[in-house]
Length: 185
Ligand code: K1U
Ligand code: ZN
Image (cartoon, rainbow, N blue to C red; front, side, top):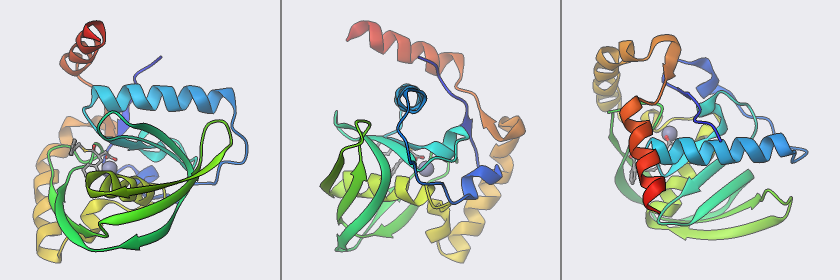
């Protein structure tokens, strides 16, 4: 398994509309495994293919020990509305309150090419919507008010030099903590 570099704000791939997956290959299965490893090492609860430089419509989520690969996901139903703080592995150290539906039903395909539907609420619903947004080139900062978006952009201007080439290479500390956790399990 490999840890992947994470693309950060400013990389144009984060703004692409992804391409639906038509065939699930062993290479795609390996990509999903590498994305889980990268997401866990970065302490995230989700990761979408464009965040690791890929254009396939695929994301992984893991909220509370429920790892899930979603391929070609679609929101079939959404209800309720709540504001809560979000972060993004592609915009490190920037946070903002985003209003989203609280309950969603998502249809997707799994790595065995089986279609499935999943109902989600609370953080799980929020994470699914955040990842599906990534697959359509949308980021959580797009939902912020003009004022809050400007403040987030100003903060990002100071942060972005830490990521030459718009690449977030996980630090040796993050990687070591991840391996240490693996050894404990
Ligand atoms: O796609 C990503 O960038 C991952 C992102 C997903 C996400 C976070 C918060 C709300 C919705 C979706 C992250 O995992 S950022 C890490 C983070 O902020 C977080 C981690 C654990 C619980 C809650 C937030
Ligand atoms: Zn994100």
